[in-house]
Length: 289
Length: 328
Image 1 (tube, chains in turn green, red):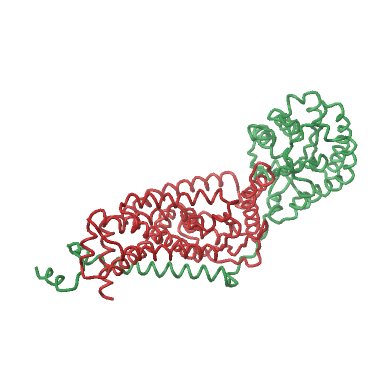
Image 2 (cartoon, chains in turn blue, purple):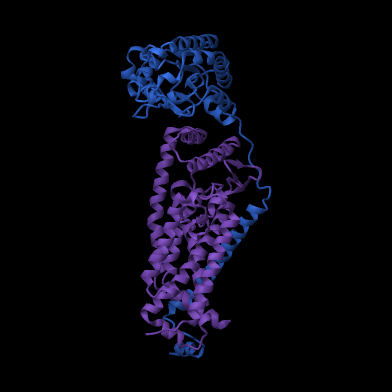
């Protein structure tokens, strides 16, 4: 009763809900809310200050020493690490399952080698040229991924020769690619491939490098059959680079797509389909065993 | 002054008694564990696939570059991806992991993702019927027959609303931190974050990029979320004064907030949409350095747009509330 009269005597504009709890609640709630409001305002002002008058900020730790490349002896290892680089062939374009030769061959190697083969990543980019790949290999972060691998799978050069970099393989018309123009591209493309091989080897002295060779997707088009000659020259050059390297392999693929183009090529008539990639994966598996 | 304080006390307790804040806490308690579980699955998946976070980031860069190389991706998405690639590269080059899963980064990501929809929705739970419910239940007459000026009554409601908005954001952050900590651990306050990426056409300017701690980043982010939540609160406050029914004002505001999220995704070619408040709510994106939805938007621009919308709304609310006749 005494409490009631006390609240009545104060000026109270509204019928306050009765009860003891609310009289205790208000100081707690009020101060908590006020504290939160001040905190929010401080955060807001700070964010504006930082956006418009940035300070130097905290020191960023120096890049740590890069991971050491693995040693070469596969037999001594429990687990092999693989990395895939290159263009749309490595990306698996045309494969409706999305696996490409990379994942197929990893699965096969897992069985045939009798140890775990792990894919560190597929860093292939559709439409990549050798020039761009060489630029990427200069980046420390890209190189650090390559450095950790025991096995490097890569394809490159298709875009340098066919010049379809931007259209992602939409040249269903073989007439667009003339054998003469392709042949003319060869001298400028060769040094780029050599640079790629030597860069890879410099980054990772121990890994087994597997280069998947080029093929002529237009073999069934009579006017474009001449492309095969240039492709063969390119593959022979890659073979030479691999032999010079000593721990690299070139996987031949050109024969697969000569008589069986319809079976192994995808609908864009340029990239292999899932069966074509499956056959490439088989060959990689054979080459590494 | 004492008079106004007791009015604020009264309004605050009225909202509290309506259990609105309890509902908000309950919603957070249900939703946050779901998000934490999803995040946990993602990091477990990454840990199983990649030995090293650098590989994860490199793979993300590659995936985004593939999308950029594709013809089927719209140009504005490419712009967004390009800036993401450059940012990730910046992190990689400095050997800093941009998405270490811990309670602090989880909380920051949670706030970033909730600034346009979730936080406004929670603000609406309190703001949308602040005035209209009094009208619907008839208690407005009891309020107005007291010897208190009308503007004071409305001011007390506005202050109570501000206090609640200020309470909601730290509560959401705190709950998210506590729950995420169970799964990811409570460390990570001192880890570096890079801020100051400026989107400049297709390139990202890194000249003013500097590192701050996760803790500082989280506080700044909360401040920015608070500002956009306050704008939503102010507009919702006006709607609540203008409309008689609580349901009508809630639906109106929800429609406005949701349409903003949709517009931000598709309005890049309609450039005058940038003057709408709901397209500007995502203030934290400026801190992250992601490109704004519409060309020409910047932190300063968005703040001014939001402030103008807020000020106009409050002016209208006060003008209407002090003049209008209250019938039946």
